[in-house]
Every structure is written in structure tokens, then in C-alpha cells.
Length: 116
Length: 113
Image (cartoon, rainbow over the protein chains, first blue to last red):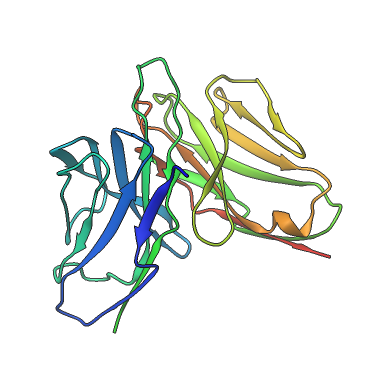
């Protein structure tokens, strides 16, 4: 089945450690995104990539890094520089399509990261 | 400020009630406004609205966009316990049709039997 797979579902990290969250999609979408969800704040965009080997910062990129070496994969690294990393992380993808098309974003099941 | 604001933040109703969820925004230069339902993990897509005044329906759910007054509503009629979820409103950025979305805080709906 086509979809977006995030792993792991739950992740625990000690303070000061970097950790990488995986996101893979087989929808043949060009664009992929990482969002962070905190209670009462909705989803906030961390990084996005519209094409392989290219990515841009979103609204809250500090303390995070990404790579886009393959179309299917968009891993997110939460570095020790991220002050409040405990959150629910959602990966999404969408087809960029032609400018007149409307394409919604499809989300993965999320990874809940807890810093202990 | 460029925000999407949803209200109410939480709502408790009984099965069979009708609910209206609100979403307001502050800019006009975007292409689409979207509604998602989030039950446990992944938000699932409900509606994409691009034109003002045209209602979109899916079963007991419907939504409409008012570009003049800068808001959208999501209606759920004859609510069921399975409608319990967080409902997220989001708008796109500029004329782009990608998933670079600005989300509201969400409305948590609880439907009691």
C-alpha cells in the first residue's frame, strides 16, 4: 500500500544526544515536510524539501537538520542544540503538481520523542 | 500577525448533536484552506477549500470558506462517538499548492454516548 512510514513510533533520548527520525514515502511525491506538534500550539513547520538534494528551513528550524538524498526519504535529526525537543513529530508529503492543481499533504503516523 | 485561529479550543457534546467549528485567518494571499481530522496519530485529510461560498460535503461533514470575512467553518451533523478527535484547520502559503501549511491550534471534540 502507498503511504508514509515514520519510525520509530516512540523514541527516548538523553539530553545532549542527537537523534534521527526516519520518514519514508512510496507515493512518488516530490515534496516532503517535517512538522512538530505541541499541545495547544497546532503543527509548526520545521523543514521542507520540494525536490531531491534541496531543502529549506520552515518556521522553527533551529536545532534541527535534514537531508534529502533520495526522493523517498527525508530524515530529521534533532540535535543537542534544540532546547525543547520533547514533542510529537509528523512527516508529510505532497505532490507539487502543476500550479493550478490543488494537492493536499498526506501525513505519517508520527514519532513521539521524549528527552529524559 | 500571520496566524490561523480556531475556536473553540475544546468542545464536549452528546451523540446526535450538531457542532460548528470555526477557523479564522489574517491574510488573503493564499490558495487553499484545509481541514484535517486527527484521532490518534496521523492527521487525515477532510476538505480543501479554494473558492469562497462553495460548500463541500462529505457525509455528515461539510465546510465552507468565506474569503471576505476571512473564516471557514466545519459542520458535523448527528455527531457520533467516532467523531471524537482533534480537528485542524490550515492554510497554504502564497500561491503555492504544496504542503507548507500554517496550522491553527486545533479544536478537540469529544462526543459522549
